[in-house]
Length: 276
Image 1 (cartoon, rainbow, N blue to C red):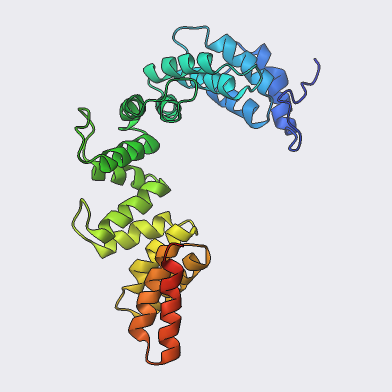
Image 2 (cartoon, rainbow, N blue to C red):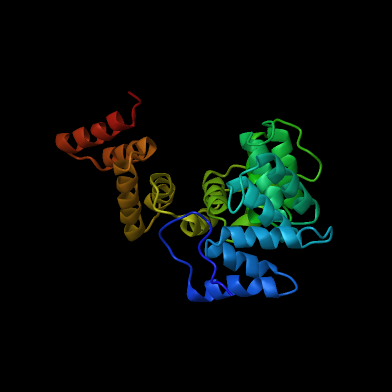
C-alpha cells in the first residue's frame, strides 16, 4: 500500500509517522470515527479527511460532528474546493442534529454575512440554540442581551449574568473579563470587588485593556502591595496605548502629588488620555 502524502497543499509541519500510518489504514476500516478524522486534519491530510467524511456523512444518521467537519472542509477549502453555500447547508444539518459547535459557526456566519445574508437576529437565534451547552454561544447570547437591554429579546434568552457565569466557569476568557468588569462596576449585579478580582484575574491575557481593568481593581485596594501592582498594570496598559489607563494614572499621580514636578507628571497623563 502506498504511503499517503500531505494532500492539504501546505508546507511547514510534516505529518507524524503515526498520522501517516493512520491515513494509510483508515480505508481498510468499516468506518472512520470522529477521532480518526480529527487526527487526519491535525496531520494536514485534508484530502484523506474529506474522503472519509463524504463516506461517513452519506448516512442520514451520521454523527453530527462529522457533518460539521465536512462543512468546515467546504468552508475552508480543505481537501476540496471551497463551497460556502454547501458549508452552510451542512452546518445547518449538523446543528439540527445537536452539534453546538455547528450552531455557533452558523451564528458567526450570519453575524458577519459570510455565505448568507447578514442578520444579527438570525445569528442570535443560532447562538441561543447552543447556549445551554456551549460556552461561546452562552457568551454571545449574554453579550447580545447586555448590549440591547432596551430591546425585547427572544424567549429563552435567559439571565445574561447566569449565561456569562456559565461561560466563565468553563474557562471562556472574554466572559470572565466581562463578568469581572460588571461586578467591579456594579452593573446588572451588586458590586462585588472580590468577584470582580476573581474573574478579571481568570481572564487576564496581558492585553492593554485586560491590564487596565485589573489594574484599576488592584489600584483601589487597601493593601499597599496590591495598589503598587495595580499601578504597574496601569502603566503597562498606558504604554500599550490604552488612553483610559492614562487617565487613571493621572488621577493617582495627582492625588499623590506634593511638588510642582509631580503635578506636571500627573497633567502629562491627562494630556495622553485626551483624544487628539
